[in-house]
Image (cartoon, rainbow, N blue to C red; front, top):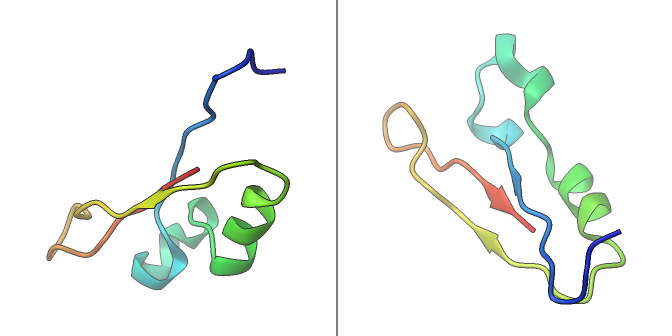
Length: 60
């Protein structure tokens, strides 16, 4: 349980920008939506990925 005002931060690559061999560590849009369910506030921030400027993902 989080204390009042606490935050849960998830940092993950998104499937669309992740090589096939690493897809097991990435979340797709349905998984991100499920993770966001039930929270009072959800914010998604995109960050540059490790290669070619592909966006990474900071979610919730």
